[in-house]
Each structure stands twice: as C-alpha cells, then as structure tokens.
Image (cartoon, rainbow, N blue to C red; front, top):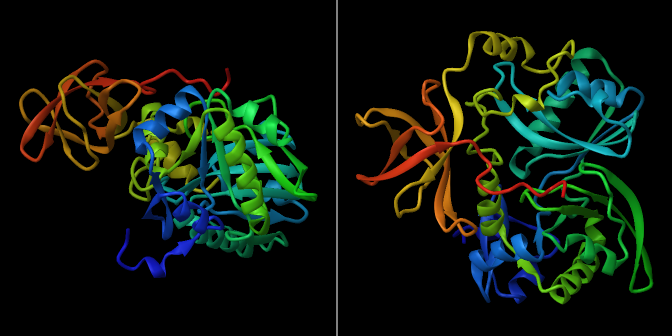
Length: 377
C-alpha cells in the first residue's frame, strides 16, 4: 500500500474490500484490491479459469461524447473504424499521438449516432478527454465531451459460470461478443439502471456491468452473493494481471505507451486503415510500409523461474535483442510467461534468455495467447 494512500482515490466499494480482507494497492492513482485473504492471486486466478470471478474495476475511466455527429467526430479521432459496428455494439480502439504511439486504449460503446460512451484507462482519462476537446475545438464541432470518471462503477464477471451469475441476479446476458444492453434490474425493491457488455480482460466468457456510482454497492453485493453461490470468488488486480498476461493482452504503461507505436505493440488489428483520417494515421501508415524497428512477442520460460517486466532479452551470443514489458508466473501452465519488445529479426520458436539480476532464464519465442481463448465459446 502506498505511504500516501490518503491521497489516492477510492472506489465506491472501498469499505467492502477492506472488510473482506483485501490487500489494497495503488493503481493508476486509485487504491484498489490487489488480492483477498483466503487464497490470494493463484486461487482467484484459478476461480476465473474454472468457475467464476468478480472484479471491481471502478477505477477505469468513463467519458461520453454526445450531440449531432458524435460518432462521426469520434471516428476522425480514434484508430478503429466505428462504421464497422452498429448501435448496441462496443469496440476496442486506440487514442494515438501524432507519432502513432498510444495515449490510451479504450472501449467505445456505440449507443446511437449522437451518443458514444467510453471506458478508457484510469490514469489516462483526463488525457483522452483533453485530446478530444482539443480536436473538437480545432474543427469547430458542437459535440459535448463529458468526463464521467466518478459517475459509474465497473464490475467484471468473468469465467465459465459468468452467465449463470448474471442470470441469478436477473441481468441479461448479451449473446454476441462485444455487444451490450442498457437495462434495469430490481434489487431490494429498487429499479436500478445499468449497462451489461459481453467483454472482459481475462480470455474467458465474461461481462462488464456498469451501474451508476450511487448504486454500485447494491449491484456488487448481489453479484458477490451469486458468485459465491456458484463456487467462485472476488478477485483483485493481481489475478487480473496474471489472467491478461496469459492471454497476451496489452496493458497501458507496459505493452502500450506514448513511447510504443500501435504496430510495435502488435495491435494494428485495432486500426481502421481504410478510414480517411484518425490521429497518428500518417506516421503509422509510413511505419506500416517501412516496417517496425521492434515487435511484440510472447516468451515462454524453458527453465524454472519467473520472468519480470523491464529485464533485458538476450540472444545466444549474449547480445541484448529487446526487453520484457510484462512477466509473471502462469497459474494455468505452472510456468513463467512474459511479453516483450524485441528486434524485428527475432524469429518465432527462437531460444533466448532473460537477464534476471545476473541470472539467465531460458525462454522460447511464442505467439500469444499462452492459453486457449474462450471469450466466444
């Protein structure tokens, strides 16, 4: 826990977490549950892979673009093509710099042509909103851009039994991946409005539930009871990180940053290349033609040891050919895994090593994910 925890922001469930044995930690300027007593990260991780886990990720940002032409405006800004989806669908997209690097990655919920709801990363919300405001003012648009960071909670229900949990609470389960519904649920005699989206950050079937901040505790309590009844458990950011690393999912500040381009990060699939414009298009298009100077890969440990972020990647001759961006122990595989940025000449299947405090840990270059993707199962 940060020594200055009193200066960190608290989510709507802070008291619930501390009363249920959560170890709290700073993340993106917020004090969030890292893990809970009664099993810790590995038990929480395995619950998500085998039954169901419940995450409070209310620290994530929330913003909205409203008004005539809202979606058209956003499509001139963000990397992905909103014309590929229709109202009731969500899309993973990027807010890029002019250099093609990543200010943030976010989910855009398309409600209507004049209403786009955004969930950016916690620490980057203000930067995304500021960039949108600057673009709006530069082109003289009348769209309204709202920073709603503390107006909504966000809960992730993830795992094979996620649908059962939502059914038990009376929530709809959108059938299509990245689709959402705005709905109401009756809890304690009160009709509560919220959004349910079939998405997540674990590689399992899952949903993100977005209630108003004022109703967050009531919704969470209902979900927590249903999760416990299904044999699952609440999970913290520790398990969230091991789960997303097993899937090879990028995390801003690690695989994504204003120092790493979208192509270097391996997420060119989130770019609408045929769109006439988006932030960073010119630079990124040039890089696509010329080739990247480094690329993102997965590394699977071939020896006993746990990879960590920020260590050098070495070839057989001991030459540094890159560095890790994330690293952890995979509870599913019982093995060390990592993500890394390496020289473009590094080949799939190549045997490399990590320099971990002077000790070399053998790794093999692989294409993530490290485990089977089940989001569309």
